[in-house]
Image 1: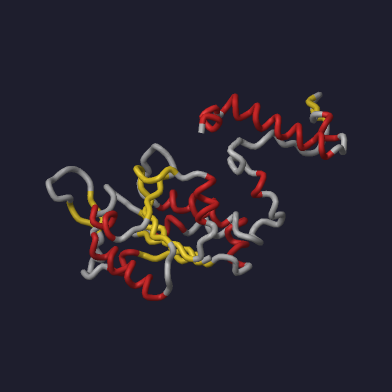
Image 2: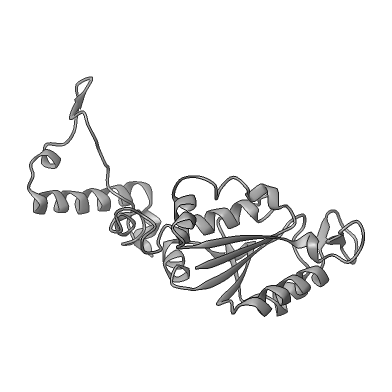
Length: 225
């Protein structure tokens, strides 16, 4: 997979991709992450990519011209399956959408900033809008990192145990069941006996029951869906 993130603040994305699973995925050649500085597509000496909004009001807006030039340049080098704009009012990101996007070959994530992007970008230059939640961030960079992490960990070969992702929360519409590790007893707090039984059928049934119980208690909205 080739994942390109377009941002006017590339330093915000230096950290998330330099450690742990995401770094190993790059080292293995399973994903290429390209951070593209939108300011490289500005035409003035100050590398301006934003301006005041027509009609007045507080806050600056990312201009359409540098974004259009940037996307055109990226598309001239490879075909992109999706050009995604990270926006508070986009499609709500969930595990199903992460699964879908992990099947793509090339993606662009466009990060908004300030008061967002010129509406014509949304009307003519992107294919999809995604929100990671019902709140507002200073920009789309952290949202892009979240989306990238959720997608990349699903790629074959990224996780040492490929079945791990299949048992994550939300993969089956439920939250994950409780998990335990050694020691089996600590300060009188014991691991459930079934997990120590070696009976894999009973263990799997217990996990399914616990997942359903925890979902009812903590995320009943998932059962309604």
